[in-house]
Image (cartoon, rainbow, N blue to C red):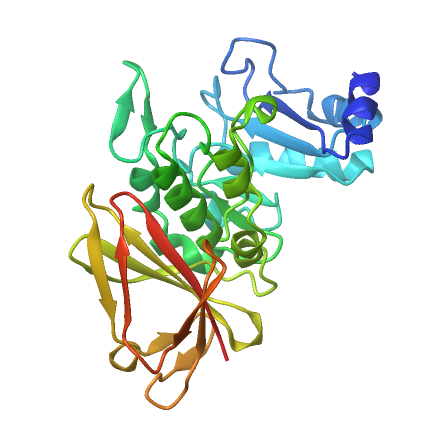
Length: 306
């Protein structure tokens, strides 16, 4: 395993490992319960950078106590390891995990669907939009070093290009951890272009670490707003409908007021430049009504710059 970790590091990648807080993992391999400190020392010796800690086979176990124990074991092992809590949001980790790990799952597992739920008989997987609908109320708990995790990206796993673009956009708006869940060896050009769009990724990586909030919904188009550093703002217009919608957004009638980030912008007195982050085109300023067609299950994502 050490040789494998060294090989991965030599490729410029990080090495993540999976285990479980229970007695057995979800795939019925031995879990970590009762062996937290031994396992943490092994992970440090191997040279792993990231530990995803799942929650199967945990009957009778307290989540906060179990994850805190593993967190202490990792710290005692002496190697910086990102600790990912994956108890699917069942125990509301956003209320207690800020100093336990760097990210915590907020929902059940994701699936490569834009809408709906995938029923696996004994458990279900949520679509991209199903997950998005549960994130807005959690934004106050996220910030630098402690993030809400709506699960890994399904970009390149079978959805349409526009749906992949919408998925990636909203994850970046949510300041979510960006973990590619596709096969990196078999990416299409479209998938690569989405995952490597520097302007979109920059929104995700913004220094303020503010999670976006849903500003409004009109005719199946959601408007999401993410305050950014240097008084900039990211805006994502998300078309939940399967048909094209014509967007007409009057900035002067829609001020940005966010108590969490202390952002307060009145566009009737402040004029911002508009940049389309997917086309890299300048789109005028907020002095004029913003008009654009948005294809079904797709987005327009812009950055407002003073």
